[in-house]
Image (tube, rainbow, N blue to C red):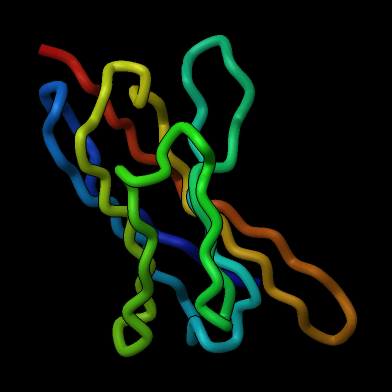
Length: 119
């Protein structure tokens, strides 16, 4: 299993930037996929960005060119850099990990971080 602790979030003006961090309880090298999801009020949780151990990244069309997912292996931390934020980016952002070990797949979630984009 993997424990995920998120930090960052808060209120930001449209056009602004913010960075979310997610620190894992074990080496990121052992985790198959790290990802960020978000859930806006009244909407389903959606994938924002993901990165594999091979550093292959994937982004939702709505954030391409604005958001960047990255990993600091030495700190066992994954980041989501969010630029040119829009009001529609307002949501609770969740860190997610997929660990494959002993033939089993473990999915874990962070506690969530509120991001509010408003003037």
